[in-house]
Image (tube, rainbow, N blue to C red; front, side):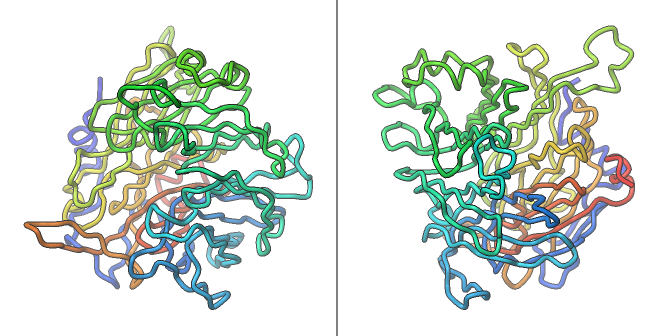
Length: 481
């Protein structure tokens, strides 16, 4: 039975006492965080910079968080870096989180000058040189975006003193890349100048990161140079299962017209590179079209899942699942609800949605709090500590939500954490009857986890990095002591 997020799930959460209790319409400085089965382990203000992607890397005997940033605000386009005393455009924060209770801010790498989506360095991935086929064994490589202009590769073996190695420039946009650390193949979300869409995929061999080798451009037929007619929905980001899984899962759309595209990785990498309609269609295995009201920000594969509920069935107890997360982009619920969807791709050319999840709005008066309310992204680590067991979903002003996904046909919320706002938290405004109305609310933007079980959330409204851990029954569901 297809679950209705606002009814069945909401009723369960409220009955179980897991949904947030009704709260004041607007957060106030000094209010405590709202939490269930999650607690704050550590915090860093990230110099008051709007944050997008956290990537956590085990580096020698240290754990380092690399955090990409949006551009600055109109009021503060280039915040002062306390380490240098100089105003710097938002770029990449590098934070030592070896002791989560005492994060140490190591370095800020400035990004492209600009505000909001027009500057910064949103995306970051990290690979060890020892794992890359042609990498320097002593190097640690960081792949980051430089605003909308370029992709950059840095050696961060000494995270306090990064060294720029190379740039892939001349672009009109960038976004949510994926880098295979065992092969070096990188799927770079780019805006190639001659393509008809803002975002498509450029595939590079970065097995020797200092010397990138381009493999091909890829996108949907109708986006390529020289095509005519309507332009299909732009790419948001891919996730690859590498040569073992031989699939790449592309998410198109943000908050509308979403699509999951499943692609044969081998055919994508080794097929004809010329971007003709036939060559662009050739690697596609399947696609799942979403309705006009929802997008596909994150398409996270969870393959060969053993479903306990189906264990005694003659067939079908093992399923290939993909979790699709939409992105809310408008403040104060001025769009259809963006949420989390679970698709069954066991019969790969016949994908189907089987369940969904959203935070019940009434549990926290979230449409009245200010800022965005709705899903944005999930953690993307496939480390065994949480993979196929617990997923963490950022929900903007509803914080981060922990979901028990061991039965993806019936996901259950088992915890949440909504950080407190601070004096640095930026306001979010809407126009009502011709007048601007602004409210201040947490905007939990992206989330990641590490192999130790810590959860890292960053805030779009300049509130910083919160390091969390599960407690109580949620910790038990993950199999943590």
